[in-house]
Length: 251
Ligand SMILES: [Zn+2]
Image (cartoon, rainbow, N blue to C red):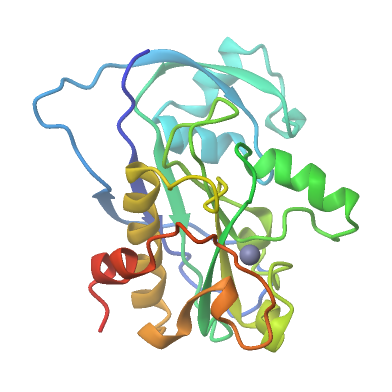
C-alpha cells in the first residue's frame, strides 16, 4: 500500500456573522501536519467515498485535483448530483489534505475530546448511526479523526456538516456543552487500545488550530469525562491525556 502524507489547510471565511451563513473561503495558510522529506510524493488514482458535508469543491481541494477533472472521470454532468456514500475515482490525486475551515463565532468556548468506543468508523458511519438515534443533523461531532478504517487515511481530519453550518453539537449534554463546545471524536476504543501516532499528530494540530483561533484557554480543553456532570470514561482509560496536553504546548 502506498504511503499517504497527510497535510492540512486552514480556510477562514472572509466574514461570517450568522451561524447559518455559507462560508466564503479564502486560502490563508497551508501547514503540514507532518512531512516525509526523503520520500518523493507521487500522484496516484484513488477511490474516495463521499462523506457527509463534502462537495466536489472540497474533495478537489483535499486531493489538489480540479473539479472538472473529477467530474469528467466520474461522468458527472452536474456537481449537485454528488451524494453521501457515493464512490468516486480521483484521478492523479495528491496525498490527502485535511481542509479545516474557521468561522468567526464567539460561541465556541470549549473543546471536548471523545473516542468513538468502536474499533472502526468514520464520519459517514457515525452519521448513519446518529440519524438512527434521532440526532437531527446527523453526526453529532464537529470533527472526526480517522484511524485508517473504512478506507480512510490514518489521522485524516473529517469536518462534519455540523461544523460547516456552525450548529450546536450533539456530543455532550453535561454542563450544556453542546451549545458552547467543539466536539472532536477520535475513531477507536481507547479502553482497549491506544490511538495511533497519526491520530495524535492530527489531534494536536486540530486542537491547537481551534484553541488559538477561538482563544480557548487550556482549562477549557477537556476530555468528555472531565466535564462536570458527565458520567462517562470517554475518551477511554488509555487516552494519553498528559502526553496530549504537553504536545499542545498550552499552559
Ligand atoms: Zn464522549
